[in-house]
Image (cartoon, rainbow, N blue to C red):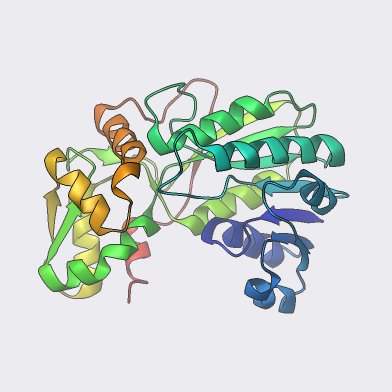
Length: 288
């Protein structure tokens, strides 16, 4: 039996779905069981716990062959990441109490760096904290989610422009579809190892340039779409227009600068590569 945190989200859901299709028993950790009824209907055992409740998490992890864990996503966290730090502390304590067979964490590209990470700081802190565990652990350092662009589909459809924070547009960035993270997570959960593993998880090898992303979205939407670089002076206003509070844009901006400078990158020593099969062209065909 495998326990999955975040089962009602895209990544946790992809891990759980992949495990179920492999014929495995799955337990889902949820904060609101009402939102997970569809999983219960598929035979998933649901256990309710806040992600910063060590006792509740330990009960959910108990008896598991493997556990998939994550820090809850937050694109506008409070200064100094207090919520994320509470979740990290609770997960560590829960794993120490429950001692499942292994633990696999959703991490992020760049998490090996100690500074200049912006939003990725939370997964760096998570990796650092979990190094005291005596059970086998693995970190899935995922590239940029293809799903992150879905929120601008209406803008792209209307204007024919696809703006990007990332630059330069011709650089090949490591992109990944969440269903491919599910493949990686389910695969690693079912493997045996000792100590620590780090996997760099993205789509087809070589990355994807942003002109190709815009072209793929255009093909799916049935119109010409131009890739447009968003100048740094426009970032603040763009983030606020997407709902980010004006005083909480700093971590996102720091993260983007880390990507654009090359500070946040793949190809680190001592890591394994996992290349999912989903290209941005295949992914974009699901756009509605």
